[in-house]
Image 1 (cartoon, rainbow, N blue to C red):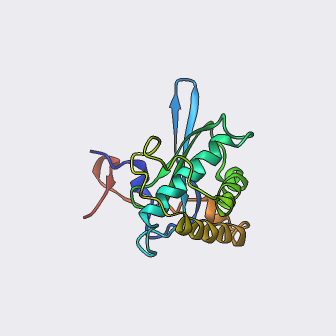
Image 2 (image 1 turned 90 degrees about the vertical axis):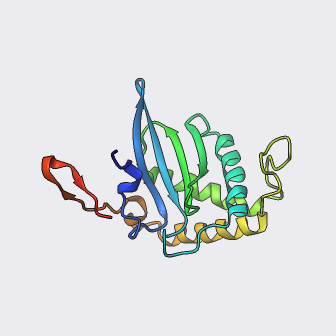
Length: 174
């Protein structure tokens, strides 16, 4: 079984940022999955699950209501490793083009008074939210993005170099 594309990225070298995870074709259209990484994998504590859940609700709501972008938004959701989010958009934009949108989305968290959709009718785990902590993570990420706006590394995945085995297949050691 082949290793999926997102596991071919060197997670020991990932820094927070906005990266293209993959580009797929759906019929005649491109669909791009972006990695919006808030934490350095395996080096920083992960995002608290309750805060992650709140950020998912707040930012998904923001993105789907952003006039210039809402028609391109397909999905916003957390990574299983709790170090960031996946954003899926129609089309294929460069990560740097998303900088302003992501910055604006995370800035909007500070003004949030209640988590949208955090009710038993709207959410499968409505009690698992932490708005205060979500605001702290959002503020940290905003400060990071602002401080690194000119750092091209926050828009480009570090690639894992793989040895080639016989037949040109990638070699993975355990």
